[in-house]
Image 1 (spheres, rainbow, N blue to C red):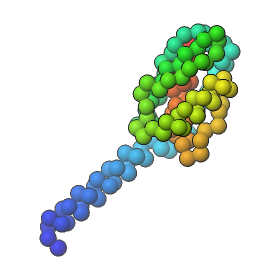
Image 2 (cartoon, one colour; image 1 turned 90 degrees about the vertical axis):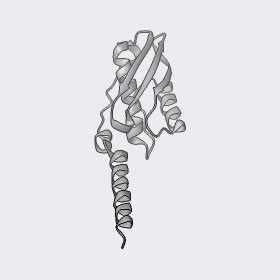
Image 3 (tube, one colour; image 1 turned 120 degrees about the vertical axis):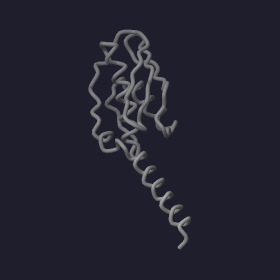
Length: 127
C-alpha cells in the first residue's frame, strides 16, 4: 500500500478520535451537574447574567426578574450544538413553574442542566 494512503488513513483516524474527544469531553461531569434550589419568592427585581462553563456546553443567559418573578430568560451565548426547541421548552418551564426543578428533556440532559446551571448562577445574584 502506498505511503500516501497510509498517511491519509492515519490522518483521518486522528481527526475522528479528536472529534469524538471534543464531542464527549465533559459529558460525564455534565450529567452530574447539580442544580440548586433557588427560592424564587425572594428574588429582587433586575436583569441578571449567569454563565456555566463546561466545554461544548458552555453558555450564558440573561434572566429578568419583575415583581419578584422570573419574567424572561434569554440565551446570550449558546452551547456549541444548540437545539432551539429544547432551549425554548426549558426556559418556558422555568418561567411557568418559577423553579429550576423542571423536567429535563430525555436525550438532552447535559445541555438542559447546563442552561439551568447558568440560570441558577444568574439568580444567585438576585437574592
